[in-house]
Image 1: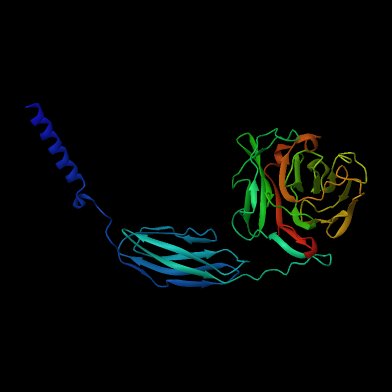
Image 2 (image 1 turned 60 degrees about the vertical axis):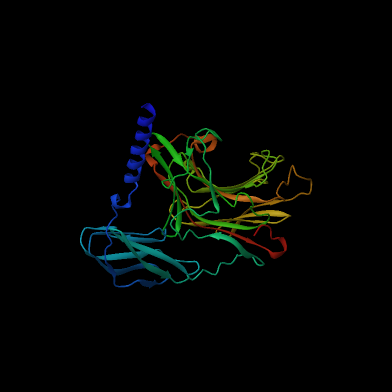
Length: 365
């Protein structure tokens, strides 16, 4: 009797499972007729918007997974709508994107082709150099060549900001990178970004166009550290441009090594008053060879540091280094004269970063 009951129960369970798996019990969204007036559109490299008429038997949604495209409206409760497709300016190669239209169980798409951009003819103000890498920040997000630092307050130089990876603190729009120093519910956040951190470059001409933030406590910097870093200052540090908010519009170029490290001498550091550094873009650059490093502000020489031939203590700069952009808050230098939190949010805006090199010394290009 017990055996019969067990067999009966198993049979009932099997019948139940078969019933659950019957496809007739699964409800699928009904197919809808979608009509799109233009299934393929072309746009110029300057970007802009184009309109496409869409109709369906039912309400529908529209979306795109391409970062350089947007579509509006994204949802329509009507059976007909005019979709506005907007493309960002393109300074690179021709690109193709897609806008999807989804109604019930049906999908259709609009192909978007944008023509190649007209790249600026980038030339070094010094002869004999060619472009090997650049970021003109023409997209909509921080590119893959950049590495985000993520560290808490106090990690270095007694600085008070938290370095985070967040679109709030590093945004790319309208052709520039914005590094934002923000007070997020009592927590100060900012960004520190490394370009080509694992390869870097050895020698060359490195330049960025930057507009500096305002406010006591801010500490923006454009600088370089060695790829194979082990000890500081023994492995070197190259500060192409730094500024602290309490000494507004005074930009500083400095090198660090064992022989010269925060000594304040004219051999290792120089400063310049740039009256519009916080309101306009200016070019900060360095030419780096095996014999010297010369720092420039808007094409004018600020500092030349020479290889004296005595070895690594004075010249650890014969290795690959990578560029860094960051905006700190307070710290050993930035906070020397206190903080003015009323200046937050503060923004360091970067128009471009470029690396140029001579063919004879090119490394990791």
